[in-house]
Image (cartoon, rainbow, N blue to C red; front, side, top):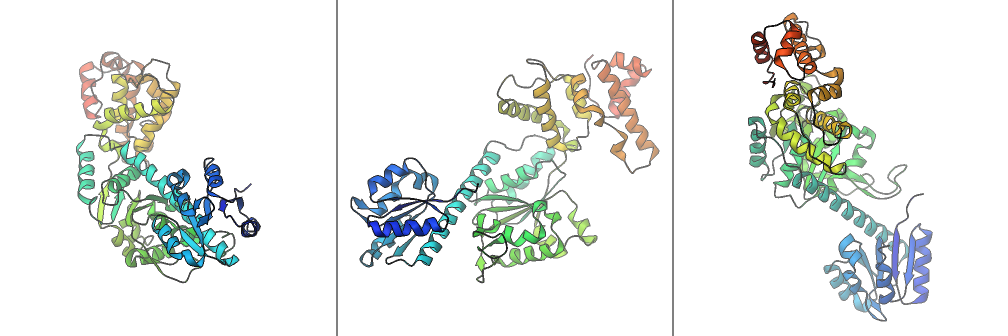
Length: 459
C-alpha cells in the first residue's frame, strides 16, 4: 500500500477546518485537524507530519510559532501559513523565518491543493538532499583513499589540485578501483563540500526516462507521472553531480546532456519555462572514451566537454605495495560491520600470494575476498596461504589472464607462475619443499621467484 502524505491542519474556525480537511482527504492526503497551538504541539511530538498547514492567528498564539517545532527544524517539515487580509505582512515575515509559503483567505481550493503539493515536494527534496549529504560525509569522512604508493600519492595530488576549482573532472579506471570514492574526495575538498553529492549510474537509466531522471517532470506530463518530481540536476543544485558509467549513454541522450552542460539550462518534462542549474560535473568511466569516440560510440564534443581534467585511478595490480594497508583498513571495517571481533591477521605467505595475484576485480574483489574470509575463518585464526588459495579457487593465475593472446612465451610464463605458486601453497610457503615438488634446486627456485615478482616466502 502506498504511503499517503500526512498533513497537520491547524485552524480555529470549525467550518473552515472541516472544509479544508474534507478537500485534502478527497485529494488523497491523510489529514489531522486541530484548533489551537497546544494541540498542534502535542501532535508534533509524535513526529507524524509531512506538512504543517496553519492559520496565522490562533486562540493561544501565532501559527508562526510552529516554526520552532522539533520536527520542523530537525526533519525539515515545511509550513504553509493561512492568513487574512490584514496579516499579509506578518505572513511575509513568517516566510523570512522559514515558512514555505502563505495563502490569503478566502482560499481557492485549486490553489490550496497546488501549494500543498509543492510544499510536500519541497520537503521530500530537502530530506533527499540531507540523505545524500550524509552519505557523502560517510564516503569521504570515514573512508579516505588508502595507500602510500607512488600511484596513489599521484591520485591524491591530482585531487588536491583540481578540487578547489570548478573544473569538470573525468575519472577513469577499471571497475572496482574506487572511482566513486575519488569523485567523493573531489567533492569533499571543494568549495561545494556543504552542497549535495549526487551519483547517477547512467547504465541504469533507460533512454526513454533520461529527461525525467535528469531534468524532472511535472505531474501528468506522461503516463505514470502521478506527482511532480525534481530531477538529478535540481537535486545536485549547488553541489556535485557524478555521471557514473557515462559511456553507457546513447548518442541521442548524449546530445541532450551536452546541451545542459554547455548552457547550464534545462526544462522539466511537462514544463515550458527554462531553468538554470549550478552544479559541478564529475564523470566516471571504466572505458577508453577516446577509443569509443573513434569507433563512433561516443560524441567527440561531449568527450571534450567532459575531459577537461582527466584523473586516472590505477588498477590494484599496479600498486600491489598498498596491499598491506588495504588489507588492514578493509579488514578492520569489515570486522566492525559484521559485529566486531579480532582484526585480520594475515600470514606472510598469504600476503605474498596476494602480492602475486593480478586482482582483475581490483579493490572491490579484495574487499569481497576479505569479507568471505571474515565469515569463514575460524575465530582467532589467521588467513593462511592455503586458506586464501581455497577462497580464490581456480580463478587465480589462469591462462585466461592472456586470453586472446596466442604468444607462446606469454602463455608458458603464466603456466610457469601458476605451477610455482601452487607448489608454494601446498608446502605452506616453504621454498625448500616447493623446490622439491618442482624438481628444482632451491637456488634455481629463487630465480623463478624474482622472475615472477613473487616476494620472499618464509621457510
